[in-house]
Image 1 (cartoon, rainbow, N blue to C red):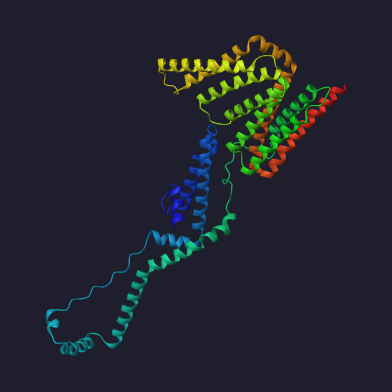
Image 2: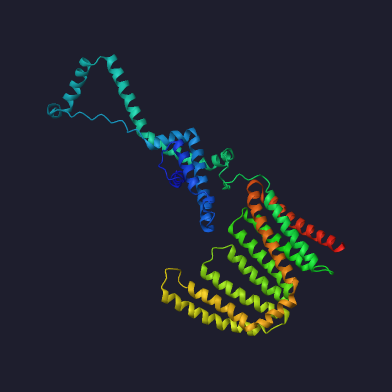
Length: 439
């Protein structure tokens, strides 16, 4: 009964509530804690998923418990136990009879009984008296028997749950989106195929007359397989899956764009920047953390471009960025203390840090060196940027498709669908690029 009482507490109702009231309370709580109502906040949405799972399990256990006839009888007996039958008080003997000797009382009692009660009436009254006593004893023993039956039912309860759990509807086992999606997400998958086709076409055309490096194709496919496998392991599009998808998309897109702009060194630097930006996009980072990451991203972007194209002193750019970042941080904190605004503490300093770091990197590298690096990168920088945009757009579109397909299908089905989508899109883009070269 401890589990059943816990179920009543989860549904916020009192024990002994009718089945209709239980269903009404369940519907109200399912509406209040539906995860779609917290789509703007991943932390609250995760909490709503857990709360709704507890509500579903408590409701199923209560319905199963109340569907058993023995449970209903026990529940009624447990709520309203009939009071035991009162025993008839013993009549006190009068002083005269108490003062008589035992021999006289034993002699006078049969004579008085024989006069007032005949033998037939005496036997019927005895039967009636014993019947009443037996019923009273049964009434007093009733609670003990109900407790014993209750204990027996609690021992067999897990077997009943495992036996009849399949009979209940599982429409609320996994929270479903409020929209009525079709069984197959055509729209997001079409966008994903088009995005990956653009990426494949750019990699094929920009590498002409030679072929694109094999590591680019392997990096794209490997990242897709990685976060799709995480989705298969999680079983749903959790914030952890979104984090893996966006971080991998940012890292791959930044690596390709950086390689097109300045070679392997720039590709590694821009890949790290893309991974950091993807982590920010998939989390509830504070504004101060966002400003700090953007500051570091700007410095790494400029330094990587200088190092990859060998058009400037990238160490000088980093040193100038650090000095200017300290100055910007000091000015930002001073302005924040002077204004005394009600915003987050340290936000002004973080904004000053970002502005100082960007300005220092550009000043340390020099406008002439940056212009020379852009000339060396040429049109490949634009190609790399569009390839990165295609990868990120394709990953986001496939994540939307995964959220919809994993509701109606299995995780393995969604994994195969995502892998096939990216593979087909890249092949289509490569095929279109080859035809363009031949013409």
